[in-house]
Figure 1 (tube, rainbow, N blue to C red):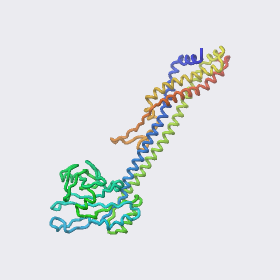
Figure 2: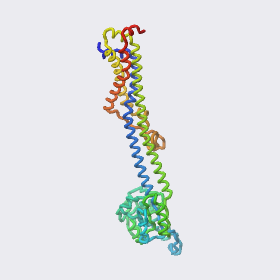
Figure 3: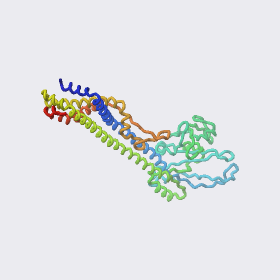
Figure 4: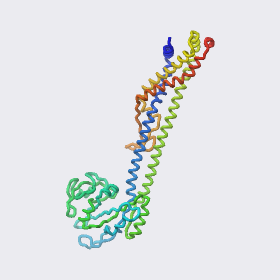
Amino acid sequence: MGILTRATRNITRRKTRALLVIVALSLALTMLISIPPSITANQEAAQKTIDSLTASAEYANSMVNRVATEIDCNLPLAFRTDAGPYHNESVLEQPLMNVTDYSNLTSIPDVASVIPILQQNQRDSEGKYLYDVIGIPLDASLLTNYPTILPANITAGRNLQAGDSGVVVLQERVANLFGVGVDGTVNILGQNFKVVGIQGQDAYNATAAYMSLDEAQIITNTTGQAMTFKVFATSIDNVGTVENDIKTAYPELSVITAKSLINQAHDMQQRSDEQIQRAQAGMNQIQSTATVEMGVVILADCVIVLFIMLYTVRERTKEIGTLKALGASNKTILGQFMLEGVLLSLIAGIVGLAIGTFAATTLANLLLPYPTDAGFGTVMSEGGILKASPIVVTITPQLILFGLGVAVLLGALGSLYPAWRAARIRPAEAMRYE
């Protein structure tokens, strides 16, 4: 009878013990084959989290920085005493500025751009306020670099674009006043404009008609004038210096900066950096946790095989003596017991692979931490409830072969010492064993 036949028969002869060993080994091997793809899947998810955080932080910071670097310059409010239908009323107005008078704003150090904005209010025949005409330079580079000068919250149609002419974006109250929608036509101060967009409520609660600066100047007879200069510093760190230089060069101007936004930009950058650091630390945590878990599983496999085979050797001492008395060599005994250990591990590996193929994703989310946009653990859902952000694991053919190879190797290593011990038993001693 060959050693393979005897090894197989000995395993099937002790069905309950073999089943318990196979169950224990298969669970351990299931974990073992689930961990490597879990590491890959988790690290990919972690990297996506980091990339998403980085992109979001860069976009948010760029938008906040653009607003935070804005410095609004205009003349102080003044009373005009010939206002109203009878030219005998006093109205508080924002005086206009000649653009050429302030052309040197661009030469102030650390100024990236100076954008003139015209805003003129329109009233009815009785002097009642209706809406503002707002003119914006529709230059491609300005709109690309400083999109905040355009109206926000466009709810229908589109926003103004570079090179637009004869078009207007209306705030919804103004659209209702004219009774028009997108693609409609309105007459503003004697000139027809096509409505290309409707603006919903915005942060400034504006009631305005937005158009190109040139056309706004023409219809309001204010060519070469602006109500506000939006000065943009090269960075938020230079805003204070630019503000002081403007006040020194043009003391008549009222200069307003978004100091709160500057602080907000710094806080946002700090929070983004902290989130990215937590996500990166989580990637390292995945690797270290997986390494420990794989070490524990491998050790557990070897120990299970070791103790089972040691017990088997002790239990079958008389059988070993009989085999030796019949002429079995040490090599034959060594091979038989090692083969038993390998067969047990191989069967457990096959079972473990079958389980792991279906349960790898569940095990991966149980065994390893998983990345979220706040680092690792939980993430705020759309409904405001904290929930997990699970990953999906796929068992590849290469991983199946790896699992089978590991099962055979662990079986061989775990049974090596018991098999060696069995091979060294002397027949006379074995026959006396009780």
